[in-house]
Structure formats: structure tokens, C-alpha cells
Length: 386
Length: 251
Image (cartoon, rainbow over all chains, first blue to last red; front, side, top):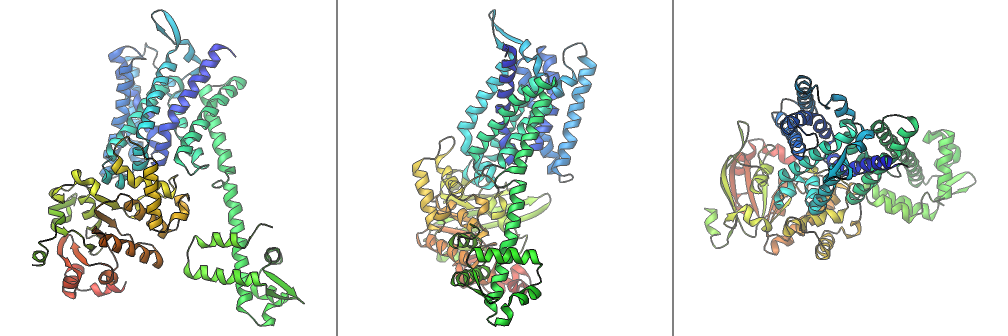
């Protein structure tokens, strides 16, 4: 592995971490699309900043561009507050306008400099190592590594300092306000960090990948955990993993690095979406099937309990009256037998003591309707453990 | 006047000429309200009467266009630590990745202030509050895995942990089962016994005399406020709900 390769992976990983942190809060605040808006509408900020500073890597340019990001958020909120359009429409109105203003500014005034729309949208990670940072004659590494590295350090410091405030204002705005943690301050703080991260990152990886890195890792992590700190950690992990595996995918396919990283993000999300232990599609389907059988079992047991009359409990009679097909009846009967809920006596089905107790408790549950109870009940009777 | 009888007790919450409007339409109109210390008060009124708005304006969550609010004679900003708030259950995202204990811990954040982090002391307080509302066994449960009544208890525990003097609650009985309703009202009564002031936005007129000792009728304007036994009668109910209030009572 050459030095340049290592540097590219390092830059990509740091960008991934710097994006995953604000991204987690954006996803939880249901504001994922705002990152898309910011990533596009910072373009005029960059162009104007470039006219003033004449230097694509000046900190002033980053600040000006971040300011455009904030203006985007303010505009979106303003339009939304009029009540004439919904939030997503407001976002869709604001950022293309600002973005196209940037495109026109480039076309009119900056045709002769290295600032083109392709670079803004897609970035070019492969060139990042060629733009060196030189301090008093010594080469200290790629410029973008320094920029995004500083942004990451600030982001992490802010995260550790204001974690509690971020959490409470994301979960419950009303409580945060009544406790004196101004939700507006935290909201615009988060927007500022997101904007600065976007500006710092897009030079290396482009606007589209910034959005992907902000949204996909937290969305993936959200499916796997119910703990905010773990969600942050998992997001960072998924981001870094996609960055590095994406780089090697691009290496193998001789394709765009940003494109490959985004593809990896998509693949990982898809895998987790399908196979996540609790919220994954397959787990949900399995649980629904299990629940259906459970309900059938309950119905069956209740029927047995309701009818003391032997005729009503004859196997053939059950088939006719409950009106279930053979397979279904067999599943339910097997399950009941396996759990020692019923016994057979010359084709007459009756409840065992355990089945009787279980059914009484189940009726109790249905009448009082206390959600938490049925889970404990299943444990009590070792239901579905073979 | 009713107020005169209570001259001796200090006024916990005082609202002066409060007006809140969305666009041109006033939601609250020129409200004057004094809530004496140590009462368990219901705010009742029809839908859209501005009950939640009143609480939110007192707590500084909404900005009124006119009027002022004082808590024990000082502005709310200075008295934050004396006040706890239980928002409507539907106002937050229960799929948020956090546990019951963690939500209750959030109640301690106000006393901690900015930056400082909760430690063992705050955790202990949170666990005690969970025990008071009977939710200790669920402390590590993810909040979306709790029933509506349990979620409401968690919110109540979060307010208890703030150890405030005044408690504001926005419809704590909405969507909870009968057992939880009784559990909650018992906790509220215990708070009053401890000398706290409890202010509850309430929907169910039938339970007002049983649960509360003080009541405020509100319908954009304040209709009346005072002890339940003195003013909870047909006269004021009609003034608040209109002539058909008995229909809403049956609902």
C-alpha cells in the first residue's frame, strides 16, 4: 500500500466519522433531508468566499459557506412557518435555488479557476493527496486531511461537552425549553456543525457522498440498537468500514472512490435492514408469524375451556367448527402438546392443569389489557421453547 | 371574593394580562390568574380553549404577545428550578433510542445546568423516582416497549426527580388505563400533601371533584378560578362549555 493510498483511506475515514456524529442527531430529529439541502446550497457560499479570499482552502471560505448552510436552514424554516407549504416542499424550494445561483456565479465569473460543478457534486478523493499542506517548507500531509481533521476534533469536543443537551433537546423539545436549555441555540449549533462538516468534507468527497455519509450510517445503526451512545459508535463504525471497503472496491473496479463508498453504505444498510435481529424485515416477519400462531393457540385453548361438553371437544368436531385447515390445526395442536397444554383421551381433547392455568391467566390479560403482562406469561409457561 | 380567603397562603404562580395569539386569532385573551401555593388544580375547558397554551406560556415554551408571568414573585427564568413540567405524552418520539431510566435522568439535567454531566447521585435520584411510580422493574426497558400508561409514569417520574415546588402536567391521564390513572392521582395527592403546587390540564369533568381541590375554568378567556367545592357548579360549567356541556360530560 502506497503512502497516497493510505492517505486517501485516512481522509475518507475521518470524513466518515465527522459526518456520522452530526448525522446521528439529524436522523433522530427527522431532519435527514436538511443535510441534502445544506450540501447543495453551500455552493454560492463557496463561490463568494472564493472571490473574496482567492484561496479554496481558506478558513474564511469554510465559514462563509457554512453561513450559507445556516441561511438555508433559516429560509426553510421561514417558508415552512408560513404554513403555505410543508417542510419537504420548503427544502425542495430553497436548495435548488441557492445551488443554481452558485452554478451561475461559477459560469459567469470563475470559468478559468479550478472550481467546477462536477468537483462540487462528486469530489475527487483520488486527487486529495496531491494538494499538500506545507508549513515553513516542510510537507506535513494533504491539506484536506488537516481541514477535516480539525473539524472532527471540534465536533468531538462539542459532542462530549453538550451530549446531555443534545440528547434532551432531540428527545423532548418542551422539556429542554422548560429546563432552560434553549432548543434554538442547540438546533442552530447542530446546523452550524453540520454545515461546517459538509463544507470541509465536500472538497474531498463531494456533496452527494457527504449526504450519504451523514444519513446512511446512523440510519443503519438505528436498526441495531436502542441506546444513543451505541448508535453514535455504530454509526462511526459503519462509516469507517464503508470508507475503507469502498476505497478497495474502487481500487478493484477502477471506479470512482466516492461512488464506491456510497455503494458500500447502501449495501450495508440493505443487509442490516434485512437481517437486523429485532427491527430487521426478516425478524419482523418471523415474529408476526409466531404471533399469529400464538393467537391461534390462545383461541383454541379458550375454546376448550369454554366447552366442558365432550362433544364440543372431539377432534373431528374441532376440525369442523373452528374452521381451520389441516396444516393450521396440526401446527396449533402440536404446539399445545409440546407445551403440555392439552391431553388426548380417545379423540377427546382436554386441557391439562398447566393449560388450564395458562388459559385463565390469558383471559385475565385480555380483560385487563395490560400490554406488559403477556410477555411475562410466556416466560412463566415456557411457551415456544420446544 | 374567593381570593381574599387565601390571603395568608403565598401565591405560587401569578399570570398578568396574558395574551397569546397565532396570527390574528387569540388563543388566550387577557388572562389574569393567581394560583395559591399547595393546591391540586385542574385546568378545564373545551377543545381549543388554550389549556396547553396557558401552561406552555407560563413555562416560557411559547412567547406571549402581551402579559407577564411570575413564579413566587419572580420571573420564570429565575425560578426554573422550582418548576417541573410533564408534557403531553404524544409530544415526543417514543422510538428514540433510550431507556426508561435515561428518560427519568433527564429530569436532573435542569439542576445540573449546561455542560455538567449526571453522575451516581443523579442516577440514585432517578431510581428512587422510578420506584415511586412503580416502574423500577422496567428501568432498562427501551421506551417504545412500554405501554401508554407506563410511558406516562416515566414522564411523571421524570418530573418527580426534578424535586420542584410547582408541577405542571399536560393531560397526564390521556390514554392511560384505570390502574395507572389511580396510581398517578395518588402520587399527585401525595405531592400536594408535601406542600407542592400541582397544576393539571384535565379533560374528564366527572373526576374533577374527586381528584382536585382547586379548579380553573378556561375558554380563551378565564371564566373562573377557585376551590372546587365553591365554583364547580352548573353555572360556571355552562359559562365555559356552553349550554350543551352535559353532552360533553357524558362523553
